[in-house]
Image (tube, rainbow, N blue to C red; front, side, top):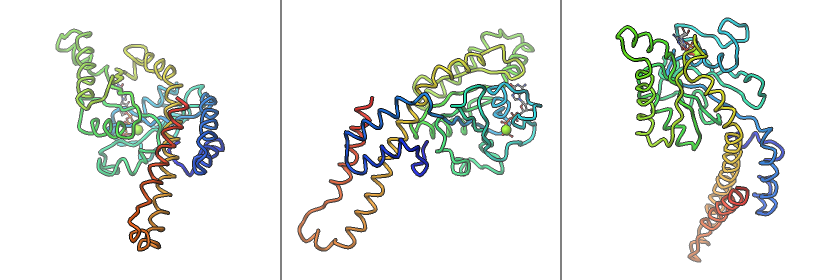
Length: 285
Ligand SMILES: Nc1nc2c(ncn2[C@@H]2O[C@H](COP(=O)(O)OP(=O)(O)OP(=O)(O)O)[C@@H](O)[C@H]2O)c(=O)[nH]1
Ligand SMILES: [Mg+2]
């Protein structure tokens, strides 16, 4: 969705109309694209620290067991070494990407986003199997910076419940504390209304797994719409960048005569394109 070099024919028509400055046509074309949003595919990246249970969650979401031939490989050692895509249950509109863990030897935290191509995904699920960590915050902030959305999964809840039982601690209180801790940490990062789910892979019928699947299905139209709007924004940014580069060349060639007349033309072009894209977004909403 993000990549402007890889646009659907309909989105290309929006791009051409915007390039030609035909705001009305761009709006009509963009509206057509949005009306077809039910067919828009979205990519969901499953991310988080290594060993947190990302691949296990991919399999659970797809309804395949870990030892199935088509399953994402799961293991106690570092297992997922390359991003890999999988289909999602019976919904061909969703593609799930199983990502390697952030902070591993192959994917140090400072190189992770670039190496996995974080920006190319439409939506994210962050998986954490312990207390909220620096890398969880890093991922959440990066997703927020890209104006995209995520769910936060606190995995391996069965381990926490077993530990609570050993200490004769109330089960519901334990669940409540884990949930509140995740929400508190996400809110401290200024994430509005964070969606947190507690999951145990060996006991998918307990806790929040069914709720996660239902929420995903319910949120899908909105996620598809967000993905399309971001694609539209990226188209206009792409145009702005190209224009900026053209203007730069133009200024290099004609700089002396422009300066000599005391006029600067570049802000007009950039501002004008920005207004156009905002108008298109505004009209279709
Ligand atoms: N008890 C328990 N173990 C889990 C759960 N989810 C995953 N595991 C185990 O945790 C280990 C790591 O799981 P993976 O799914 O491979 O984790 P990952 O995040 O994909 O790991 P990398 O690909 O190496 O980053 C495996 O032994 C899983 O069986 C869970 O909910 N409960
Ligand atoms: Mg994995």
